[in-house]
Length: 433
Ligand SMILES: *Cc1c(COP(=O)(O)O)cnc(C)c1O
Ligand SMILES: [Zn+2]
Image (cartoon, rainbow, N blue to C red; front, side, top):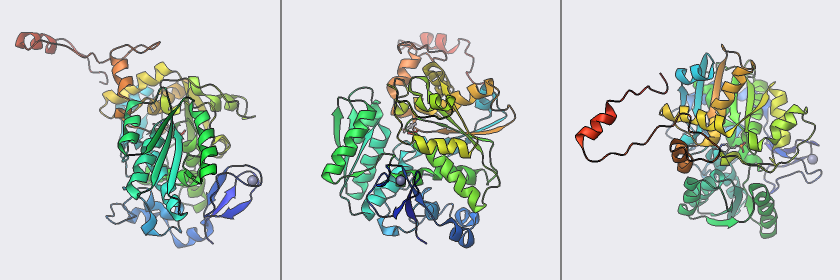
C-alpha cells in the first residue's frame, strides 16, 4: 500500500499527491501515513544504520536516509537535498551538572545547511512541490523557515516567496532570505496574521504553501528523533526536550516515536517535554487546563523564532504530549538568555529560542519532574549567528528588562603591552568549571 494523506480529526483519506493542507471534509490537520505493516516485514532499523556514512544521493542526507518513513514513493531525482541532517549530538556533562541532571546530550540542529532544523522539513516540502509540479513556493515566517525556503527554492530553480513581519526579525535570517534571492516582502503584521495572508494569497494564485501546516515538512522533521536514536545506538533516553513555537517539531517528534514503537524498533517511548517562552505560551496554558482548547495570545519574547501566539499544529502537539506522557513548561526570557549564555560559553552556541531546551531542563529538574539521574536529550534548533544582536545585547547588558547575568565583557585596550598584560593578569573564573 502506498502512503496517503489522512485527516487526524475525522480519518478521511486523500491521495498522497493532493494539493491540500487541511481536510476538505472537516478542516482538520492532515498526516502523511505510511504502510508500517509492510515496512515492519521488509525493513529493520539496521537498514538505516547501514546507510550511515553513505556518499550517495539521497541516502547521504540525514533526512532521506529514512526515506521509507518520510516520503517512500517520491522518485530520487526529484528530491531536493543539500544534503541536510547528520548533525552532531554533543555529550555535555558540565551543562548537565548546571541543569542538575546526570546525563545530557544536545542535538545541534543549527548545524543544518541554512543554520536551523527547518531544512529537514524544507527538503521534504520543496521535494513535494516538485512532485506536484508547482513552480512557486511560499511561507510566512519568524525567519528561519524563510531562510530555509529561500535556499531550497533557489537550489532547485523554483521561485521562493517569503512574508516577514516588519519588526523583530533576527538579522541573520533576513539577510539569508535576501541573499538566497527569494521574493521577500515585509508586512506590517505579526507572524500569526502573515500565516493567514500567505494561505489566502497562495490559494488565489496557485502557490504551494510551505508553512509547518504542510504535512510533508513534519515528515522531514521526524528524522531529528530518528537520528538521535541512531546516535545513541537505539538506547532510548528518558526525555527529549524541545522548544515549542508553532509546534511543528513537537508534533513531528510524537509521530516519529509512535511510528518507531509500532515498528518495534524501540522498546519504550521517551517522554517529550515542550518548552515555551513565557510571553508566547498558549500551549503551556492549554496544558494547565487539561487541553480544553487553545486560547491564542499576543506573543512577545526575545526568542523571536518562537514568538507565536496561535500555533497551527496545536492538535498534533497535544497528541504528542498524550502519546509520550509528556509535559509542557515555560521559561522567562531571562532564563532563556542565561541558558543560552551557558551553551554559548561551552563553545557550542545557539540562537535564543534553542536555549529553551536547557532552561526547560533546569526548571523541570527544579520542579522534580525530570529526575536527577535521568538521561536527557535537548534539541538546539538554530545557530548562534542567526541573532547576533541578542548576543551582543546580552553581553553588553543593554537588552531592555534583561540582565547579562553571565555577561562576557568585551575589553577595549590601546596598543600597549602593559595595558594588555593588566587585562590578561586579572583573575577570571571560567563560567563552566
Ligand atoms: C521554528 C523554530 C522554532 C520553533 O519550532 P516549532 O516547530 O515551530 O515549534 C524554534 N527554534 C528555532 C530556532 C526555530 O527556527
Ligand atoms: Zn477531517
